[in-house]
Length: 555
Image (cartoon, rainbow, N blue to C red; front, side, top):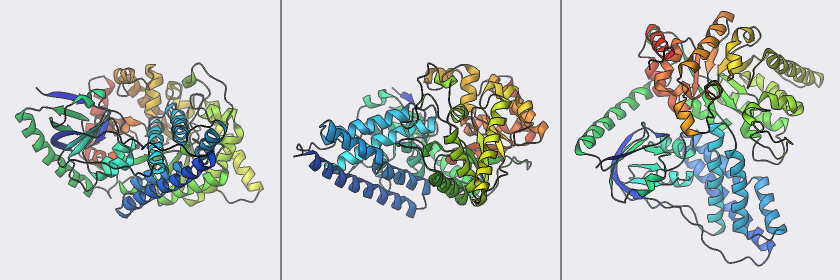
């Protein structure tokens, strides 16, 4: 009898084949080291070996034109060589006489916990990187490399896959894979999309109970897995696979065209990115700009704050990769729920309503000043806009703009090249900002709706709790009406408005958002081709009708 499991995302495509389980590879047991010095010498050798292997994988992806995927392995190589990781392992081995393998596990687990505490889905999913990095180091210090034993024609089932295990699937005859854990922006899903392998992630632990050899249908686009399908289901999905292949060919041909509706109404399609490497991937996906560049990657998992020069080079790299396309940089968006080892922050009972994002910058003005100086210095290398997160009042916006002017003046006083007239906009992610958008629009250069947090605050539902997030969704009329208010205010003031939350990549919502008059939609790069095709098939009048239906709760 057919049995269906539903996940949270994956890679598009349909696959049919028998189930095959892939167990996690255990690190080999190693004899006790003769001394802490011997243990740390083994650690140094294994660390170098792991970093070399990861960089070799990065080069293989780069040679194939997959910059974003190459960046995954480059970033993991940097984590393997991270000074904080090395210092903490050395401290545990020297001061606490911990065995080397235990010290590696303990340190990477602590770094993972830091990332898991974040309220940004993208950054939280980077926590899985620490498991992968720990696994790479443990295998390397034990003299092994991660390997995957792939049965031909099978659909692989696993609790999760590391990036190196996923990369091992390329070129093989595996039909697809499904994991019990992981999310849509995790590296497992990103690599699957790059490799063109149908995949579904986050299907839950029930996945692991499917017997080997069970006939399966995997629908990556719907994030579903059907066990023991009927003959009718198998025939239907084989036809679906042929249709998907045809759609992929059509969308690839649209890559160089601007986003627009069928009647020519422009709707720019930009990308959300989290590192300079992802900017190149965004261009490859047809992104016309970057609507959200998260800068948090520079500040996390380290013992001290990034220097002005380090930030300047990162921002400049993104601008140059976008070749003149607009890059909207979100200033530091961390807070009480995301402790940083170099920032003393008091415990908060309700950190999502506390000192976070711009409010943290108010409490740490030097940290903000350094970031603004780096942005001003990088700005001459492209089209850089500054976006302030967690704005709730006009005073918040005015404070941010005043700090930018002060940073520009300090650079001018020192004779350092920079650009002072950067557009300063805000995220519309609090209900307060949405309902006072007419006031904020008088002094903001642009709006960008952060639909994830706007939904959380409007619906009073913690988006980190899956049952609540599923019940109180970002397609609620309440959320759409707040977006409508912001769009009307932006248009009245003559400033552009975009959206950079997950709502932009929702196939049903994208058309309605265009109908509400949003000028730009920013999303994960992989979603741009299909969204471009979808928008190109509807007129503005049809988009406005879709918006009215969603505002009335009729979707």
